[in-house]
Length: 361
Image (cartoon, rainbow, N blue to C red; front, side, top):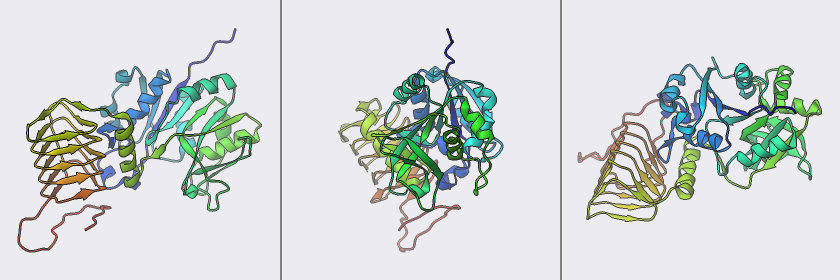
């Protein structure tokens, strides 16, 4: 009787996070919080739920140590994490090549560390095991397929071809950042060459599997999928997670003059004074909200301070300070940043703005 080889996971947490600058000048994009938890936390949740124990995490020289420090050895999730250094980002297939020694002959889930999906991967893992295919890819219709890897499929769902960020897409089906492969993907990667972008593309490797007559299966997701690489996408992810996954929990100190409505989480150590909180929102440990209104779909990070302000649909990171702002919406405020009302009589704006910042007034 043939012994079943345990499935592993390869999480891609390298890259430079250029689309989220200036936040990612000082931190890894995969650690940016969604509802006050690093994006990677949700990735590890999903992997652990699929009963996968061995996880390799691809990291970069710039942010790898930070990811190690924050995410640890994986024991919180019941995982055994091996960190694998990728000297420079040269494509998703190159990341698999970098992790080949860790992967060995095991089938594996490849999971992009800045992607969130609205379902568990456990059913896909079970289907992969039972169907004896060499690759399983998840697809999702999108409005801008040129920004993604795109799959062309026939009426029966069979994959006819794949392209990476095509100028003229043959379909609107984008490849979601979760893949499942057998060891056959390694031979396919050995047969490809860098694309015009100078990268080893995973779409080229899957295309080579198809050309090699190896079975490749696809599923079209019927839940949400979010690539959190840009500000608006990150805000959208924060909205969805707060809306679908959070419940009311009031552990912090809330005075009698404050009003709490809806699914609001106030973590232990937070203080709410003379304020209105309308969920879904989360207020992190040690945060202070005073004389303010915090509206739906807002995350207030640990240690943040908000006074005399109105905030909705925003992500406020740890240690930030917002004071005297009459209305703040659709905003992403970085760690220890300050947004304050100028009390001088003149009407001029006074700003200190770093590289790649965006200010709308």
